[in-house]
Amino acid sequence: MIEGINSLLTQADVQVRISTEWYRLEEISISDDGTMPIVVTDCDGGEWDYDMADIDEFDSAFEAFKGMDTSSIIGEA
Image (cartoon, rainbow, N blue to C red; front, side, top):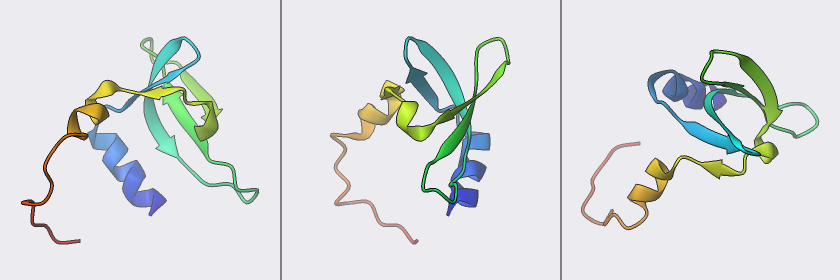
C-alpha cells in the first residue's frame, strides 16, 4: 500500500504545511514503532525528514473534491 502511495507522490505535487512552511510531500513510510516518517522538500530543493503527525495542513486542492458527487462515478479497484 505504501509503495502505491509513494508511486502516486512521484506523479502528483502534494503540498503540506508543517508549522509555517509549505513543503512538497515526497515519500511516506511506516516504522516498526507505528510512526509514519515522511520526506518533504522545500522550494529550494532541500530535503527534510518529519513525521506524518507533524503535518498541520494539506494543500487545499484536496478540499476541492469534498463536495463532489461520487454516486455517478464507476471505477474498478
